Length: 146
Length: 146
Length: 81
Length: 81
Image (cartoon, rainbow over all chains, first blue to last red; front, side):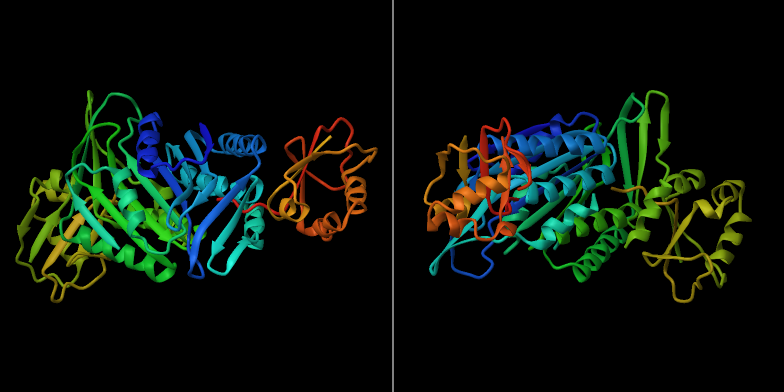
């Protein structure tokens, strides 16, 4: 039930394999990765700022909420901060459970809460300058599902 | 948009990484792996029988239905047949999309249809003998979501 | 036509596939013919609610016609994934 | 108390954090004091609906009291993931 926040790149495939090997008795493993996407074209870099201390606390609370709500044999959150290039992996979550519905729901729950409740902010650097990414209303709305 | 059926073991982490690298423009990648789970204890092996020809056709139809319904930049289904040991990975699906909701929903859809519409049958070998795994009513019920 | 059996249907009948000459117009009529052959067929086809059928590798209904069909497969509900 | 600023709040105010001496009883009163300091604070706190606040690293409301709080952070809605 690990939470990690760091600037170093990580290998999502290796994370999924290690997570799967450790998720004792699981029949289902779900993973999600979020990538730096060049929406408008011309993206040079994505800067991710965070709130050291609160970030780790908020992610641990989100993970604990998922563990209370679903029958999980494992849960993982990894999130980078710092400067990332287009196509790089920003973050991932993984969940393991006996049954697939638990693993899928818990992974979506982790993502929905992480998006709106963990203190990260994205800034896009393009040829035209830099701009903070605006929060999406539908990310806040997603929480009403749970 | 690949579908593969074979008896060889595969590396889900390597599959996720290759899939992610190829999923052009994706912001979200979801993967699911199904593992051989020793439910009652004493499981020696899981035998997976399938219907060569129909299997590939059924999986391609399920993938095509997902591609029509969600905005995906990638979809992958890999399923093993033959004799597997407890803890081995039986199958995986992966989906890539711009937005996470599409990737999650499409992955759950692939799994729900694969469970009830693709011609695979599981037999468990234990100390006490061998028995075919019964289909679960809730797997059939899961299709009513879509 | 080719008739294929999978999982416990295959085990009960003792064959993975066989060539069958039939005038049956529907899957249900074919099942009636097979049931009449031998006890192992009667046992395999005892409860149709526990069986599924595919015609030329597409899931079908027991009421479906067999015109032009080359391959019929009988099996229990699927348990992949 | 320590007051922290993140993302464009940090950029508008020009500081990541500062020590603030205040008698403000609530977050809203603290915001009023900060707004009165200089134009850059007034600009950062112009629209509270675009801001979030955390007290001792827990999300909070602008109406919440500041008794015993050591660290207040102001920032825009989060955009992680």
